[in-house]
Image: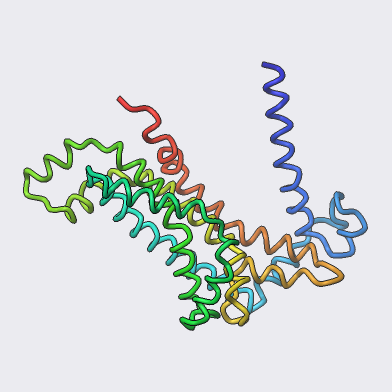
Length: 269
């Protein structure tokens, strides 16, 4: 028991110490950071870095771009994944299994493997330097994992509910909207948080497809604080904290659904 508590304490410190360093660095000047990286700021905490970032008009634009891309990517991915998962669970034949297997195979292809052909395709379609292009790529890259999660949950829904809906004259669309979706809210919320974190923090695709400053997202914009010979760590860490804030807020408000979603179907009977 003592060893378990000690292990948990070490694990907590490994998470807490980097977080504290990031928070302290964000309220320091660059000189204070290099002089004493782990120490407290001289003369109290300074929030000039936060003020400077919010005063940057370009940073507000980057934040807006990330918000647009993330919201549309998450919403459309959830809608398509829920429809596909419902269709797969309603197919009690080999077609459903094959379709599920195709989406599962999509999870096995690393994004780095398809970067060259994907960039060539996006270039031919004229979707580089475009928020629409980012949204489409995000949907295609995360749809397999969303289908995998939601299919596993919808398979646990009682078949009697759908049979009763059929007797009452409900079609597939009404069963999807009136039965499957309300019952799947915990799993949908958990998947939404998972997708939100992936899309909000995504750097690979914006770095690959975006070169115009007008379409840069927040993770890509944070690279501007990192130069070839030096890095403005206080501003960089301030940007990291601001970029992390929406994820923390989303988790706080959806925590109940997230926990219910990841535990749903664990005990059946």
